[in-house]
Image (tube, rainbow, N blue to C red; front, side, top):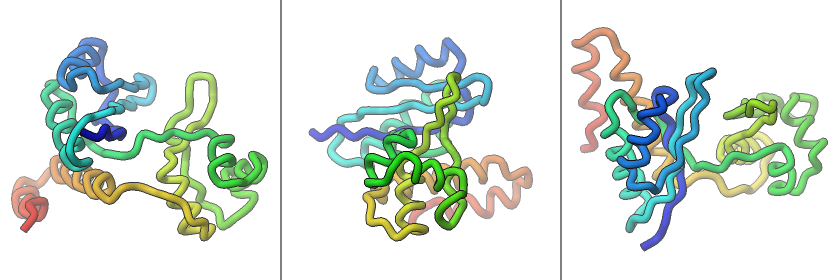
Length: 179
């Protein structure tokens, strides 16, 4: 059975007791990342399953067994530094820094997904690879379609849950059901 690596973004940073509950709920195949200062929370998983879709769905179900936590996004867990980006693209670190700062290229480089407490910036490789493909014409591997679809559905679900008008929420909820 193959192992799939991916990340699920949480609705908030988990509390200490929820971190232990997440470990138990995910059967020990997840690591929790959190930053209470930014309220960032995520679970990175190495899940055995027959398909990526099965891995994603079962992981979301497991995570959401922890009361109060909700999965709001899915992505490849592939954080990269400027040096990593340079190595993967065959560019120099200076060239990447200039892209990041808007001094070279078309502008609009993706924002870092995380800034460590030490100030190091990390980007999501998928965001960077997509930007480089779409804006710079580089042929780079991006994201499996299953993760893209799951991420979009989770974002739509979160938006729907946040809709204050009950009638609108009820009318739009049917759109999330596949035909």
